Length: 375
Ligand code: ASP
Image (cartoon, rainbow, N blue to C red; front, side, top):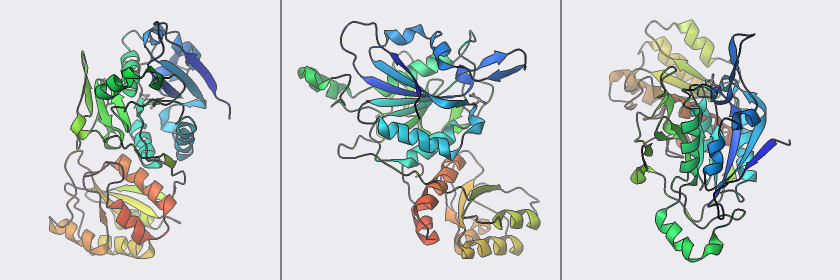
């Protein structure tokens, strides 16, 4: 599928320091207000670029492609995650880093999914977007995008010094020898860089849209960008990228609430072909102890449905067995999600179920961190 492509070359003199590949998927970032329909609708990126003349002042070259259909991210789906992963793989050798412009509503799901799909990633993949469209004077789009590009392009200072000795190591078309500072999938938003699979959209009105309650911020952007290096996944010189592109759609999320009835739980766990269930429990992973509830879950687990226990609390962790109300979950074979987010849990299930058929293997893999999503 040919993509609409724009090349942005720096006007600053000298050879570009690095190359960034940008994928525009849509979202508020590039939307415009349609007065006829009284609503925000996605907009062509060529026209968005008119609002960003400062991109030419960066000392790196940018290649920007637009997906065939620009979407509000509420329409995001696994097929588009596969497309994004394949685009990254196709351009992996040629570009030093990647930025994805994405709607905020499902950005944490996409970041989580990509963190599991891009196995062996060793380059930055930074997702960002905006709460206000770029055409609005007070928009946060410009700062988010430009800082995301800066973070994607950031390399280890020591490595740059070494590379400067041999200028041939810096090329606009060949991969660099410097080490990227953030070789993982991240969300950058409102001055904070977060590990993608630890992020959650927490706010739909204020600019601070994303939080990472259970993992420290990877960087804070002020006058300078301060990286929290001990928490950033280290660069692995010998890693090579490979993709997991089969995602099993036969998964769902069940959020518990006081008063949930047997027919509701039964109708969810008995969905035809269901293979994975994220159970959003109370507090430290607690659930009702009614026998109908535990029996229904146990029957599903015995049939091969993998049940993953994730807390409804944004911070803290599931500790199955701490309370009587979670001990039986442990006994019937529910897997603890520890401090994982719901976004990471559901996408991890899709990816693992896409790779493995044996529920026992899926349960074992679920319980271990794959890409820094739980601790
Ligand atoms: N509905 C928009 C989206 O997720 C919201 C945003 O981008 O902030 O695409």
